[in-house]
Image 1: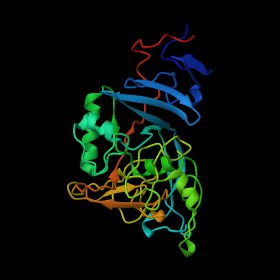
Image 2: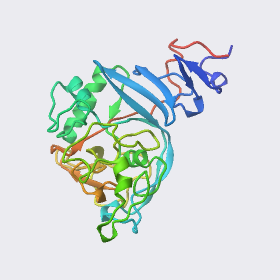
Image 3: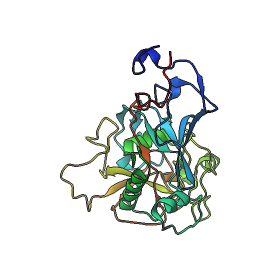
Image 4: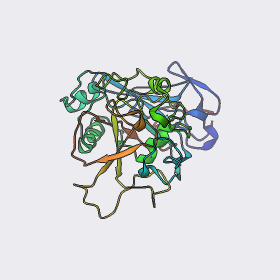
Length: 311
């Protein structure tokens, strides 16, 4: 029997856990153990997922693996805005968890005991929430669930997750806005935006997810990120960290949002689209999703006796 904390016993072959067949090479935990907060976990065609349950509401989180990508839009991308450049290399050094949908009204109500949304429906994304509201939600979630460390994603993490390994304007392909024409069929498969949303938010899961299994990364609601706003990516970090200025007045600094919304034109439903609002502003376009981690690969669960040693 090997030492339970040594690399010799890390599971290499697929194994079954609570009815789920797991391939450790695709799982964020070398030991094959779920996070302590997980009410369920498994693996499907999109990769590894975990589930988080608060009261009677369950939220799925997707594991976003580490990697590198080119952030922003090239100068020749149709429909681009100047603040989307210059393109630059970013390294996501550590994998992280990300909600597979924007925060729903059902989950928001379970945690916050109110519903600020203009377009009500438990499976619709919560909206009319400020950046500060989103931060408060993360704090309350972390207090409710032991071992949880939710936060807003950085702008780099958000775009990396949205692109899911692609480099075109959307995760489903490129767009053209010449002569005011655009591939409506492509956009209609992946996003709720001004011309197909009926003037309101929609229940999550009605459009095709990206290759990480994430829904509504483009369209439905704009999504807050952790970063302060900068007018371009000049001097941006090269890693996945949120871009924060040391001497900013945190009460007034503009904050980034991404993704386009039900009220936006097709031009804004692109992976590189970005804009900003003050941290206290609320409107019916603004929602968010939560990130968690990065996760320490050698989870303490094994040494705490939550699993048998593997010889």
